[in-house]
Length: 366
Image (cartoon, rainbow, N blue to C red; front, top):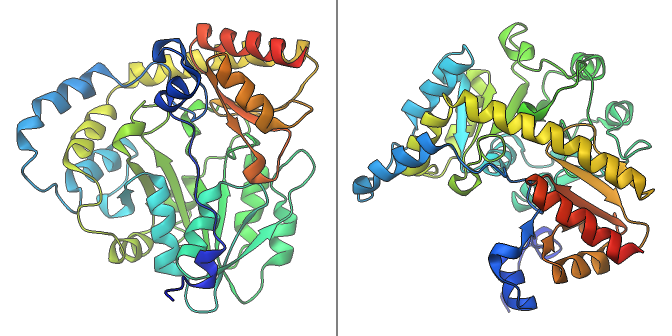
């Protein structure tokens, strides 16, 4: 009998936010009447300049993309005042997370991440046939950096930190992260996953770029994405900043042509769409205030300091509330897979969508 390796056999399948089409069919609801607040997507959509550029490039689909994504990496490097060899791109930042595991975990090595860290850290580690150390979270579902340091041993090779963290929305401050980075041994790669960086308004959020630009650290990589603030989740492009030594290691395990032609063109254009970024951040800030205020009136526990989503403890089985919300045309994300059975993660849509969620939740919980 054909058998999977034990690490793969025990690995659950990653479940993304439920698609609008699936909910429409299951509950007989018109798709345009459904508010999808499950996947941290940008309610403003993608920049019109990107859509125009992609439309013009459709006659190039018979041509392979640039495997090294030179032009896109050049654009990213220029935007952040770096050289191209300090930039890596992937098919979403999730692929970069996987490539890091492949490139830097050797036999007997382990990755380390928080109890409520992004699910792909576990997937990437086990899929590359390595073990992991999950560090128990601090109160409030926060990263416990002291516990991370206490758990480092001679098998620790990669540490994944999401800041802000998905799905809890909790944030590490500059002081916390600076102290941590300074104490981590130089042979351990620190992955700082900043997928929600552009939404952050907190004055104490870290300037993580200084670790590579000013301090020249070879053991830090910073991950970002075009999926959130740029509204390009469908193009699947993430990028990272690191010392060229780290980038070369990732390049060695990269699949050929991992970022497609239209994605490279579209993301290069998106980097200049500052107005779209500003509008998106402004909308999220306003809707965050609205959602927190309304949920507080319902006396629900709400978590999430930064990012374009909140984690809500509904005080009962989250999966059942998730189903009832779908019946009213609202899709959110249940967090039972993160061992948070009473919690939902809710993205910010436009105001009408967010109001639809609030009214539906009130009706269900009354």
